[in-house]
Image 1 (tube, rainbow, N blue to C red):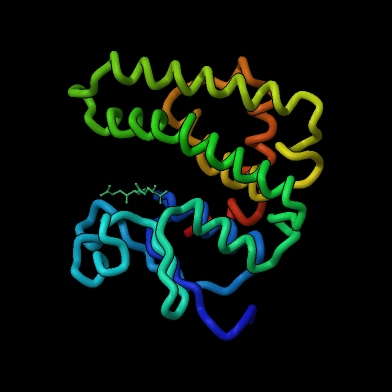
Image 2 (tube, helix red, strand yellow):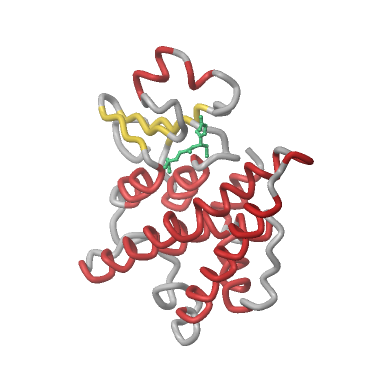
Length: 205
Ligand SMILES: N[C@@H](CCC(=O)N[C@@H](CS)C(=O)NCC(=O)O)C(=O)O
C-alpha cells in the first residue's frame, strides 16, 4: 500500500486517462480504474457531471478531492513520490511545465482534430486534416532539435514527467498517419518511452 487513501481514475485507457494511469504505474501507486468510455453516455449521468461538469474524462478522485484536466492530474500524482518523475529543482519543474504546455497547445489540439475527422470517414474534411497534420509535423521539428545533444530523454538521461506528458500526446503522431522519418531522434525517443513497462501494462487493460 502507498497510503491510506485510494486514488480513483475515471476514463478508458483509450482516452487522456491513459497519461494519469501511466504515472500511477510508473510510481507503483495503488489505484482504482473506473473504465468509462466518454462516448458511452456514462459521463452524462448526474453523478458524473457532479465530478466534472464538462462530462469529460479523466477525473481523479481521492477521498473528497476531485481533480480534472489530465495534465494537472499527472502533475499531482507525480508529486506523490517526488524525485522519480518530478525533480525538486524549480528550474527542472519549470522545464517540465514548458514541455507539458507545449504538448497540449502545439500538438494535442491539432492531432485530436485529425482523430475526430478520421472518425467521420468519407465526410472528413481533407483540407482541415491536411492543415492540422502540417501543424503537427512542424511542431515535431521543435522536439527533434531539442533532443539533439540532450541525452536519451527531453531533459537529459532520465525519463521524467516531461517525457511522459509529451509522449502521451506525441504517440498520436503515427496514429494519425504522420511519418516520423524526418524526425529520427523524436521517433527513437518515443519508442524508448512507449517501451516502458508501465505504458506496456496499460496496453493490456
Ligand atoms: N483538457 C482535458 C480534455 C479532456 C477530454 O477532451 N477528454 C475526452 C476524452 S480523451 C472526452 O472526455 N471527450 C468526450 C467529450 O468531449 O464529451 C484534459 O486534458 O483532461
